[in-house]
Image (cartoon, rainbow, N blue to C red; front, side, top):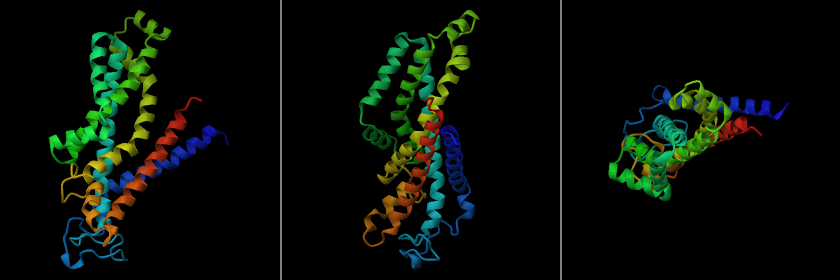
Amino acid sequence: MNKKKKTKIKLIIFGSICLTICLIALISEYIAPYDPYAQNLSEALQSPSLRHIFGTDRYGRDLFSRVLVGGRSSIFSTLALILIISIVGTIVGLYCGVYGGIRDIILMRIADMFLAFPGMVFAIAVAAVLGGGMQNAVIALAVISWPRYARIARTQAMTLKNQPFIDAARLNGLSNWQIIVKHILPNTIGTIIVMAAVDIGTMMMELAALSFLGLGAIAPAAEWGSMMNDGRSMIQTSPWMILSPGLAIFVTIMCFNLLGDTIRDYFDTK
């Protein structure tokens, strides 16, 4: 079995695992054994058992149910963030790479300004200004993350626009936007997909970090980073409160990172 075929099999396996994780998160409210928001103080801080697989929190809420439901917010917020930054960054990068001139200089200097700041520090500042909530956390991370995609897309566009087939397209009367859509974007999209796939784990960790700091999901919403924040003060007496969402983050990020690495190997021309 050649390397390409092995990579394709791995892509199918890891893709299926990640798709299953997303599907479980999507239907989590229907498969959760308990109401993730129902409080029962008589069962507060119970250790993991057959009745409560991950134990209960300080309010008696079933942690397994909250981890399941929290996956929807954590995973789909991450995917939405990746979609936003990859689309915005690609559009800006292709525009600058093809048109050049003063517009390219201005937009790239703006991108450099965002890249000059430490990423998470700048995201924390933006999230603090906007206030709490997953939507604002996504916006904060999107503000600092799109320039990397813009840089990659711009480099690809500048390389491709001088190719003979682009000159032929111009001779056929195609406008710059038609050339971008029909010729440059199809030759750039593979690189962007690989970069986005590899970025999923990083963005999920950063979203969880903002929630852990109180700048993401607002209580009582179930979200993995927020759940770890709730349990950090009780790590010595009730460690399952922080280990349960932590395990969910670890497994999910590991699966998406394996998928991202496999996609990168699959698109590797070498």
